[in-house]
Length: 245
Image 1 (cartoon, rainbow, N blue to C red):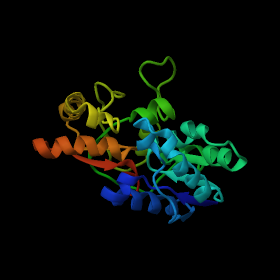
Image 2: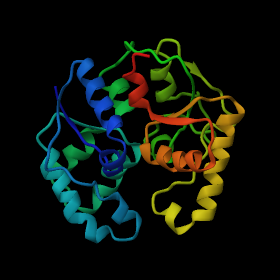
Image 3: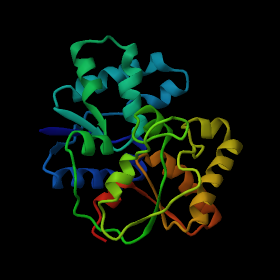
Image 4: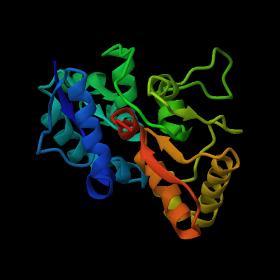
């Protein structure tokens, strides 16, 4: 299969290691990966700010850019959710419908398309998992505490394959970090308080690393960690799954 790698804006600009780790991990697992250079933003920031009509040319470009590939894989639950659930405002051509169908968040792709059951990775650290809202409640990458049913987590399942890792049990496993894209700009005080609460949960349980499938959430918490000198670091889940210790 040929997999097109879609890299979110903030990963491209601020956290390229997460994108590189995604590429290397997919290649290790036997995928032929390409990076279409015509790709731009998925349009989520505009839409979230009430400018969805202005975002429609971006949506059209996404469909045109990624339409010819077997799968589109992205290391971001929020971007994937936007493509799958908000591209309904453009004409639903066969190409648009196909792109929406074959766009996958990384963990979802590893588990439900590649059927990964083992990984050659080692990461000897105490790791706390942050479940992003879009990934957890939008893409169902894990079970939210408000739902009845068997508990599961795509990230915990994959990370449990990593040698020497110790996954930390948190008090509130599915609470928002407060980022919310432009929410953190429009409501900075509330956003900051929510971020501090999440960081405190990790510190209380001696996490060394906070990981997530959404670098945007990690970026928000990393800003607080750095400014307040907390003994934590953040890493995208792809970096840990691609790590050799």
